[in-house]
Length: 475
Figure 1 (cartoon, rainbow, N blue to C red):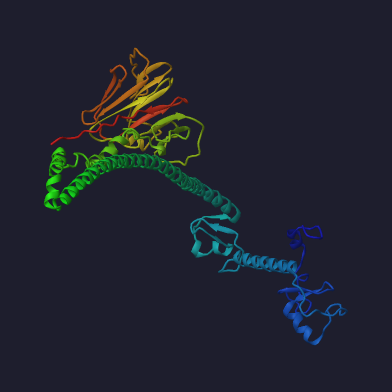
Figure 2 (cartoon, one colour):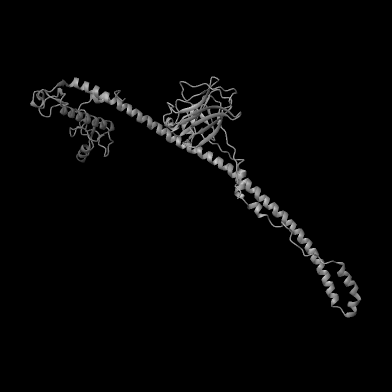
């Protein structure tokens, strides 16, 4: 609202061209300025007036400032007034026939254009069909509105896809950060293992070094004693040999006795195993470390695909377990389940034999099986699905949801073994705890088959690890 209480639109409706005209040039204000006496003029007009007279052209009482402020409100009013005036002039010129200067009152249905009454009677529109302007406009607006409807629907689809793309972009960053943290955590554990193993092996090497160094010191000390005693005896004997004959002969018996009483020492030998056993420390070092690492690493034959998981399913950090939880904000994806609380394995199989065990535990409702790749692309209909199901205490083999055959299971199943023989056209299920066969689907597989898991409770389904083994081929 303006200071006078009227809105800008109401002000525009009440002003005339005279109200918006400069008192000097008598034309619509251009870049109006306002004087201290509240009178407004075009800036250029006022500057020209100011060169001759220094007083307001209207009241002629107050002096004119050299640089009066702009009248922005008046400027906006003038610009809007000129725009509306030009639009009215343009509309009036467009509503007249360009050939006859008459008002356009009819619409030629054959030429699809507005015409005047003179055009109707001309040869150009002979035998043509006409409608009054207002009727034709109403009919064509309705027709155009109908044509606009699919475009609006298409726009809505585009906006939904764009919104999903925006969510996907955010989710990609979130996925990357989460995956990066998981990778760093795993490598941190591996670094710890390798660091501890390095320290243990260096410690064993230094312990052997210290032990064998002590042995060498002990042996060297004993040799030094023997060398000193033998050297002293040789020195004494040689002194007697250099004595006068009489003196030598007087001490001869004692010298011979001293020499004969000390038997000749055996030549000293370096003990076997005195050196560092490098082969023990370095031989097959990387293999031995890797073989020991089996205790800290695991292998799971099937890993779950988070991008296929229903938004209510929670996957374990290592992607081997799934359970139901709260709805999560996940972007839409062609392979994501939306209507079924299911998730697929990350890898599909189109040849060979494959096997994995699933621990279902105490879960009262679950489904385990395989889904064809063609069905994976249309996860809402689920054709090509082969699974066994536990629901309402009953086990069924569900390849045809309308006619699932009941399975006769004597003991409650806690683990399920899934075995796919793609080339042999068989998908089998068994109980690994009792080695009991449950059911086999016989089917000619043509698509890549993906492991399928379904749960509607918080009880987890877990893919069990395979034990690691190392086989060394001897030459």
